[in-house]
Image (cartoon, rainbow, N blue to C red):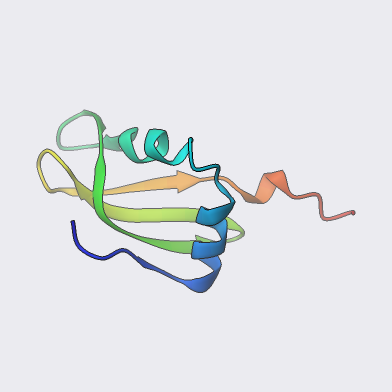
Amino acid sequence: MSAKIFSLQAELLWESVPPAVRPTLLCNVWCGQCRTEVEIVDYAGKEKAGDLILEGRCAVCAGRVARFIETSERRNPLI
């Protein structure tokens, strides 16, 4: 697996995900080519509107896949 590249904000969001949950998120990514859940490999992370997006490759067919992780709704902007 190649080095993972994250924006600073994406790295902070990924670190906020409990370590025990991360493997589950990485292994439950939909691949449109395989038409099933797969593992994402060689992924990079970016932040968009307070949420984390992982973009990488399918471990089975090497097609492009992405995982959207909602993190913005965990924050309460009124506090």
